[in-house]
Length: 314
Image 1 (cartoon, rainbow, N blue to C red):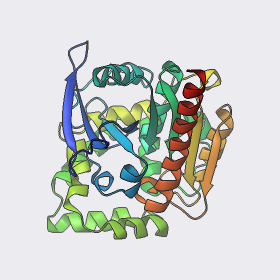
Image 2 (image 1 turned 30 degrees about the vertical axis):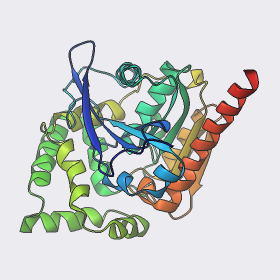
Image 3 (image 1 turned 60 degrees about the horizontal axis):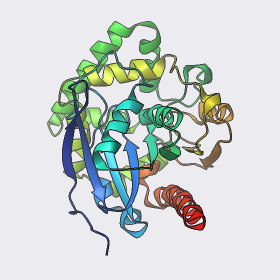
């Protein structure tokens, strides 16, 4: 019988070859289908919904959530690029004894999933982009994007010092969660989401563990989020034409944080991309049980197919 982990997440860290600490959490089945899941921006290893997600146990997943530099338990590395992330991930995979694995990235984590697919083609079996951030060259049409995200991307492109200040203010607001004034800020943020996203968040309820994801994202201050946004908002340095790994893109057509028009343009730039656009859905696809199950069943199908081929050659 598979070795099932505790219901609560398991926080861990490793020391990388350059001396930095890389924090990560594990969810699911210890000897299950390995999935490296990259958090959004800002984000952290703390994804409480994974502890209750039916697909994790039913499909037999071992979910690993590493934190990028400056988030949570991971030491900062402001000069690292999106392409450099693959080196951190392979060190984690080797530490855990993983031969091959799947990668997925939600929102700001999407580019980092592609980095691993490009640089680790013999180890990564598939890459899944979940409402992913899109390359700058696809961002000409921002119709439907919330005012807050329009501001963030504009500052990152043209006035980075003001973005640094904005992230510092956001970090301070996160630390004040639960105080009277923070409720007004929360309502302003909810107002920028589409109805689908608000329903998903309502279904999750006022889970104190959910707040921990943002709290841990800013554990070391706002620099991690600032540098992550700067990397995503400028040229990624990834040659998408060199992709050999299957890529699955999932995006909600009503997403207000990363609109669907750039996502469609992004999908066309990825060779052989299997794109799924969910009608009227928003940005929180991974937190929606039905949609998350569909995405993970697609990954599990690739894993099963690979195992069948391996058995046939034995």
